[in-house]
Amino acid sequence: MKKKIMFLFASLTLLSACSAAPSGGNSAGGSAKAGNESEGDTIKIGLNLELSGAVAGYGSQEKEGALLAIEKINEDGGILGKQVEAVEKDNKSDNNEAATSAANLSTNDKVVAIIGPATSGATKAAIPNVTKAGVPMITPSATADEITVNGDMVQEYVFRSCFQDSFQGVILAQYAADTMQASKAAILGDNSSDYAKGLSKAFEGEFNGDIVTKENFTTGDKDFQAQLTKIKNSDYDVLYVPGYYEEAGLIIKQAREMGIEEPILGADGFGDEKMIELAGAINVSNVFYTGHFSSLAPANDTVQPFIDNFKEKYGKEPSTFNALSYDAMFMIKAAIEAKDSADSASITEGLATLEDFEGVTGSITMDENHNPKKSVVVIGFEDGKEDSAETINP
Image (cartoon, rainbow, N blue to C red; front, side, top):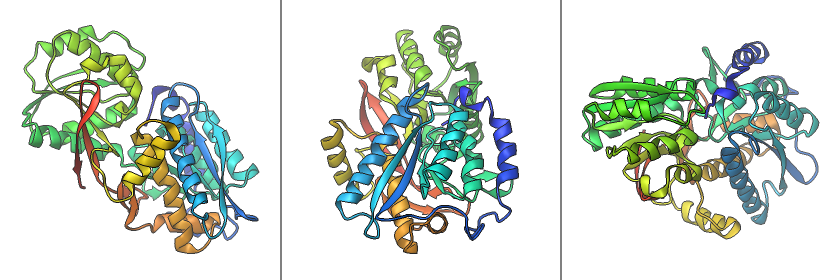
């Protein structure tokens, strides 16, 4: 995920990543002394998450998922006979804090792997420090295409459990044309967010029809009447809104109150309960977005136990972000067991060669760019509740 506030230091971060990243590219070897080793009877896993600030909704959900996974693993005997210990850092939805948290977890707390950050800007900021320390990190939800690859170089220590922006933009365009039989689309996108701009570009490039109008807004806007009036007066079949839940909720509310009844499509940035709160449940009908998980579309036999355990622990249905971080922790477990070692270098190698991992968000095989090959779920809403979920394989 990417927010405008997360990109204040993006250019410097990318430059730092270039200089800090080893020339070894995709190999997991690096330095013989790179990374940390587990000590005693515990395996320390860092959580570098947005627990306060502008996008705390994402990080807080990912903390829940990771802690549930750790609890489950420990109840089942741990990993290689060792218990897993979570070391939490709140990066406060800030790039600098994310970089500092990555450094502290790697060098002071001596974790062997890190889950997070949740957003793309914060993840980019953390890359130089985890690379320098040789500690692998898995972001559950940083979907920017360039997260795992800088130019033509794969970021050796960076992985994700989610699919990337270009993939979900393409899937939405195909879904609109093939499933909804849409031939004309309107776009209302955030022109201040690289996340939204990337989604728009992918959608426009793939959509087999006409983009009849394209309107813009800026992160933090509250009034969308002018843009929606122009859209309402045009001839279109679907309205595509690439953006985050804060603005998406208000756009849906205002669109429905203006009498706009056409389907509204969005990406995984819609995936927060606050979107429904902002829009009003009655207005969130004929709304669809690409997600990584839905209880209505179970991927395999691991899903229902996860749902049951999550509801028992937290008293609510699990979200996409809960599921993605749960998978991230179990991916680390799989990497440790595959290499029979809980040191950072072995975990890095295990993640890079992960194959046919059965997670609650689907079957995952890591590709050469450290992106998971996995399915996407298009989730439909009626009256503020999930009404449908269609799994689409890559």
